[in-house]
Length: 151
Image (cartoon, rainbow, N blue to C red; front, side, top):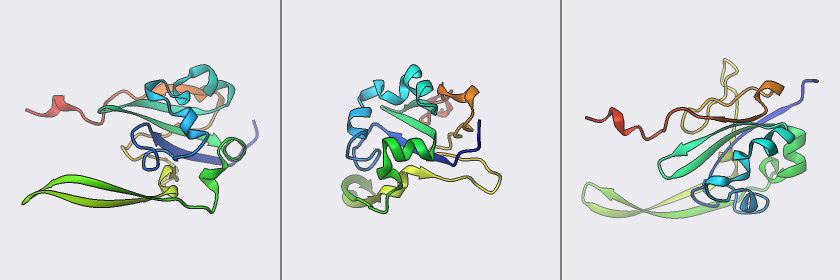
């Protein structure tokens, strides 16, 4: 295989706009826990390297793809167009509940190699290198919310 330009993106099935783009094809791709990025056959056919797993009550995918694939299937991820999404969050504070506004931009889905060439997602899951032996779905071993550590 030649040496294509690689794109790393992470999506989660929790909130459209915040955790995955609120537009097609993502709206069709993210369907509960059975999202397209959990489909081994589809990921292999599309030469995607996917790390998938659960996070509390959501499902998360770290996807390694070629730039060519992204441009053909979901060019929005690489466009100059940036959707700003605002969420009102109700959270506990020291003096009771308060509302907090959170704003997210499109580029939050993309991840980039660190100084050692490794790529990590939001929850420190390592993206797989793009190569034939990694095509398909690899399931992440531990859950971000590991309650067994609490005593």
